[in-house]
Image (cartoon, rainbow, N blue to C red):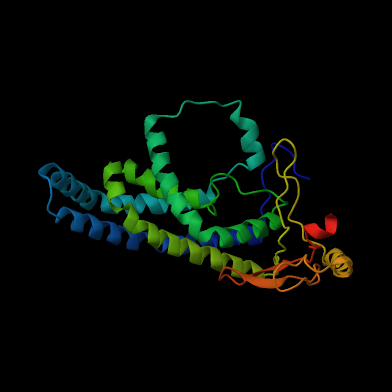
Length: 289
C-alpha cells in the first residue's frame, strides 16, 4: 500500500534501467555541442541587419568560450540527477503546501525554454515512455515517476537549459540553435526508451501491456496501486453475448459482426513492447434502443 510521505521503493531492475538510460543519453552530449557550434557559426555568417549580425557573432563567440564548461556541466548535472535521492510524487505533493517559495525570473524564463523542448520530445516518444512508466511502476509498488526522475523528458531538457544559462550563455543564443538540437534529443531519447523497454521485457517485466493498465490514484492524488491487466475471460464472455444480440444495421457499412471478438495484440512503437486489447461488447446503439 502506498502511503503519503513515503519514498518510491526501488528495485535492482529499476535502478539498472535508469543507469543504462542515463549512460545512453550521455553519449549524445558531445554531438550536441558540435551541432550547436555548427548552427551558431552558420548564423554568424549570414548577412542581415547590423544589430542582428552582431548578436549572432556574440552568441558564437560566447559559446566557443564556454563550450567545454557547458559539456562538463551537463554531464555532471545529468549524473547527479541519477544519484540524487528524489522524492516520490506523494511526498512531494504533501510538501508543496508547507514550503511555498517565490520563483525567480530566471527560473521562469528557463522553464519556458524547457517546456518548449519537452513538448517537441513528448510528441515523439509518448508511446515508448508510457510503456516504460508502467513497467517501472510495476517494479516500484505502483508509484508514479517523481518530477525529476531521469526517465522523464523534462529532466534532461532542464539539465541542458539550466547548464546553458549557468555558464553565462544567453537564452537568445539557445533559441538560435534549439531547433537544430531538438531532433537529436528526440532521436536519442526515443532509442533510450526503446532499449529500456526491451531490457525490462528480457527480464520478464510485463512482456504484454494491456490497454487497461493504469497507475491508479486515490482521492488525494497519491498513487494507489500497481498496473492492472484487463481480464481476457471477461472479454470473451462479453463477446459471446454481443454476437447473439447483433442485428442487421448495427454494424455500419459492411454488415454487423460479433462485437466481442478479441482485438488481438500489436507491437507498441518500435520498442518491441506489445499491448493486448481485451475483447469487449460493442453491439452499437441499435441494440440499446
